[in-house]
Image (cartoon, helix red, strand yellow):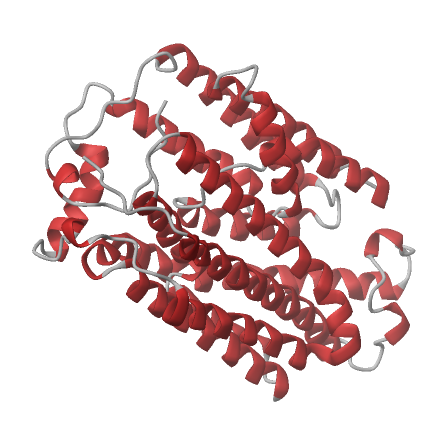
Length: 418
């Protein structure tokens, strides 16, 4: 039986830590992406680069001009780099995240968070050095690998949600805090995205990226000086070995249970849904959380998820054929209900989503630029079908707790109860 510690105001620093880290990560992501485009264009076409055309979208350019051809070639090169970056930023994390949660059970959330954020800080600093010395942008793959080894944002979120699980009772209290945290993450990412353009214009790529480093330093200080431990002494599980912790985590999916298929189906569903939403604007999540709370008054969770899938599919179709800013804005509004979910298993789908989207864009940029969004719409449709299957076969049943070691060891997985 869970016996979480009393919720105190100082526990709110877990939110402060995560939103500052998200701000820094979103900022450095935007900066390195734009710097890569600038570097590749300068490197590939050094004699034809027009400073007045750097921020002009290919959608608004005359397709018969040489400048359009050059922009398209640069976008293809940038998409190729994005594929490699997706591998470097997510590949090692697949291994790290398999043990990070169990290590936090054994050694405490704070210690593992310190390691996680320190790797992020080191990656940000290396990116700053690459920009300052104008080194080939493919060296960003090294900083991406360093970031991934530490677990990256997904690792921080995994431990953060486990921290919330430690300090709250299961049910509405936990759900509310997780929804609030996700909304704050969305706001932090949106503010970072908006601020990045102004910062780059005013102070340049290098000093803008130093601000991301400062955000990571802030997260380190918050964890080291202000964030209290979440695991009470009577929940200490250090007497268990690391192998036992790892076994307990995977036992959730393999231990005999009459409702095991329900958990497997829902986690598969979440991964499919994640493929179609990763990388979209985080600001949509803020409105999505609000809409979710309203819909909960009238519908059960499965129906809300189906409605969210429909909105995501419609949003992607609109984006596929968008030709102006107004249409893109409308697509974001339509897709708001779809932007709700816990990012614990997303790392497993992030690699396929980001790398796959870049590859599809490279292959279709000359014919139909929005084709990749039609692929996202197809994935949303698949998620809707799986939700209907879940609703018909398992939606009315109650979740069944996994016995044995998962009761003895405080695992990091957060399971939403019906």
